[in-house]
Amino acid sequence: MVLVVDDHPLNLELIEGCLADVDCRVVTATDGIEALEKIHEEPPDLVLLDVMMPRMDGYEVCQRLKQSPEGKLLPVVMVTALGQIADRVRGLEVGADDFIVKPIERVELVARVRSLLRVKHLYDRLDDAQRTIFSLARAVEAKDSLTEAHTERVGMSSRRLGEAVGLKEEELDDLLWGGVIHDIGKIGVPDYVLQKPGPLNEEELALMRQHVLIGEEIARPLRSAHDLLPIIRHHHERWDGKGYPDGLVGERTPIGARIVAICDSYDALISDRPYRKGFSHSDALATLQAGAGSQWDPELVRIFLTLNSQPAPEPETSAKAAG
Ligand SMILES: [Fe+2]
Image 1 (cartoon, rainbow, N blue to C red):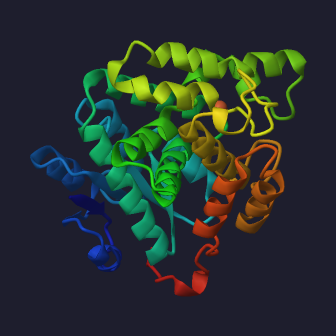
Image 2 (spheres, protein in one colour):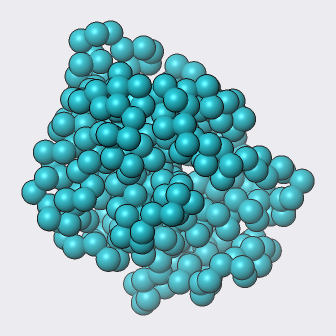
């Protein structure tokens, strides 16, 4: 069930219309207080939350939710006005999982909602230890300069690439879950290295490279994460053997790690970093292509490019929302 919260009836209608294609029930609320009441009555799987609302605004709703045990793992998407960076920062501070910018584009909304519902479904199947690891992955994301659900996108696209390659269902689950937690070891990397606004020096690189080993140690005691250890340890190996930590060449790197390496790199390329703007979709694909056979598995890059050759939807396809 998806809870849509907005004080403009037109926006509620618009979002409900967009979600008609998604296999989910939609419940609406017209302000923050009503939203919290509805969540308490029947916890949804996802909340789409407008920011400016009477009685209690979206930030406060989000903050209260994320501080409560039942709301901590409930994905919250803030619906913000275009270009208001301060709003997004505030949203991140109160624990929002993702943002949708108005005017709402149907294709984007449907894709985000489907992806977050899948993640929520995964959460629901986790045991307590896994939940802890998942929260830790979130904490890492907040420490790192990559935010806005980077690791979830990596998990989703790794699963998709694995599916295209013909991997088995359990391996696909490992890819989704492994894609989300592959960088968990960054929790042990100092903030000044993670957040350095520029290239790392030798000593800092050595610290950064530790994250694959730290991550493996964190996940090792978890029986359920056993199959993810190769992804965590080997996602920085390179096809030509010049990667780390083991310098594995070609197919000696487990396939899950080779898949996550490509999806992680793509998502990092298109993301804005403190020292550079994100690449365009096509420039990121060209970079992958250029590194196929040296950095990445050439056959997997080929399949990734085929899967992602559709450009991002143009704004003309958007439906306009008020407010
Ligand atoms: Fe990494």
